[in-house]
Amino acid sequence: MNHYYLLGRSGLRVSRLALGTMNFGTGGWHAAYGKTPEEAEPIFRRYVESGGNLIDTADFYTAGESERILGRLIAKAGNRERLVLTSKYTNSVDPSDPNASGNGRKHMIRAVEASLARLGTDYLDLYLLHTWDRITPVEEVVRTFDDLVRAGKIRYAGLSDVPAWYAARAQSYADAHALTPMVTLQLPYGLTMRDVEHEYAPMAQSLGIGLTAWSPLGGGLLTGKYKRTNRGLAGEGRLGDAAAKIDDRTWEIVEALEEVADGLGRPMAQVALNWVVTQPGVASAVAGASSEKQLAGNLAALDFEIPADARRRLDEASAPLTPQLYSMFTPGYQAMVVSPGLSIGDKPAGYAPPVLNGAPA
Image 1 (tube, helix red, strand yellow):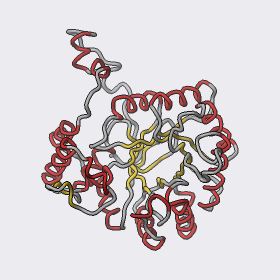
Image 2 (cartoon, helix red, strand yellow):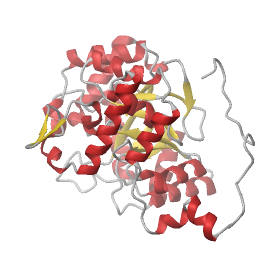
Image 3 (cartoon, helix red, strand yellow):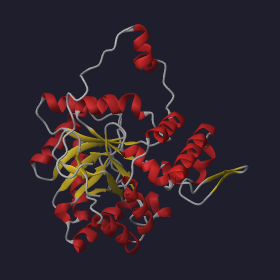
Image 4 (cartoon, helix red, strand yellow):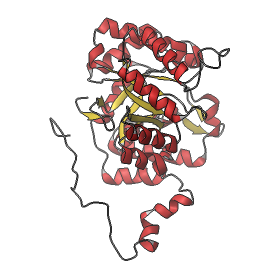
């Protein structure tokens, strides 16, 4: 990985693939598929030696073990300054304390200090609100992010798993008051989860927020390790009981992906990752790995281009259902009603070409 892109409307350069570390550690919610420090080390080492720099964790992952393991691995490697270290906060660290969870200022400051201690660092490159708590005023969140940047605790701020209107409100408030902007919005996005394209992607592009996709492989479904059977599903992995809820349309997406991957001579996971990191507005995709070998396969997803006809096959098979309201925003509808007989665009082709410093992509 030797190509880096700016994250949102910032000067922060990030890898197109981020290393997800939700499975670093064997505690908490993620224990069933967690990795010991000894198992995590070669995954981490291979990622950074391959040029990756965006590391994603959260205080909630493996009950804090993920951050502790990362802290030790970073200290051992001595590469803290070259990493874009990311953590998140929202989930409860003490169920008996109502202020030990949620998105408010008191919990955010408490959470970032605890994450810094576990990671053994004095700042985070990127800090994210993990999940919308439905009640904390967005103004409080944005101002606290700004305070943490001014205090040197974090360098950049972002959001994860919030409504599109909330992200737009946060960015607009930050812009209006010259506060720290949101440089990224992390969302579940992949061939089997494309609903974000209706609202989030155009919002993020308009407001200068870089999308980062989590679960780009659909929890492993897009790797090909699960097979449809008369009894439901065969294959070992963390989908577990959720596999029973996989509908016919999703299996059709998997079958289309398998067809395209076979035609390209590439593993399904590589094609699925390549598709998502080349979608409009996407800055990076967060991909975890259970082994160094699996990580190497993920990294190879950046080594090729999906041909136009193959991409069309994937796009058509996975096209998200369009809600009634959004159908009025489609080119077809607007060509029929808004601008019949006319060709109208927001700017001519080449008006704002992408800038690339270094080797051509």
